[in-house]
Image (cartoon, rainbow, N blue to C red):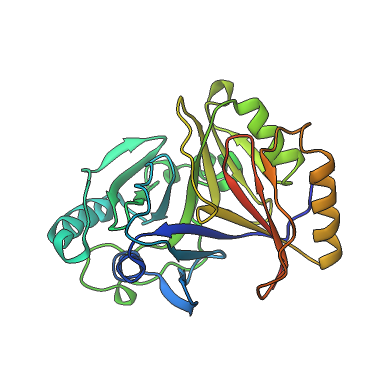
Length: 286
């Protein structure tokens, strides 16, 4: 039995400086601020079906590993080059570091940078891959456009690039066979193998294109629950059934931890730690 999520609904990031990180998302990545919590800010790209919640942890939060990063997409490689120039020009203003020149890998042209809370972010383009229909359709369509109508330049003026969607996050895995079984047979997600032996796989909800890149690593980052992904279920009854089933099958699927259901917030949810020590939140659709 796997759960049957309604959506891969949210991503979460741990922040040393909540407002500074939020400014990076709104001023450099075209997100909109949609909700302020006591110690969190939720942002969302207008072309994207999932949210990003930024959690305040404080200045002593450990630095983040680049193996856990998030990426937005622009249409052209020229935009990636423009983004590189804009990031360099405004690095001091936004507290950026580690800005890498555009590079090509896995079919994408990308620029990477580190925001002030030490999280790595990516601006990517699949312009070359998208010249052929086969490139767009492979791997569940993750490399094709994630939007029906692109944002026009006037929606994000003066930068030379327009982020069109929050496309992906990333996870590190130790044993792809064990991890992929957990994603499909426990979480109910599609697993698309990108390279031989499962060295890199894209996992996603069957109904949407945003995805998580799961890459085999020698060393696994160990994160707090503030770095997690949220899957939503349709009802409280489904949540209770999913929680009970995961407790019963924890050892079979090498789950590190299954926490109790929390009903203290706006929605009921519980946390599960997967075979690679990554956190997932299972919640009722709000």
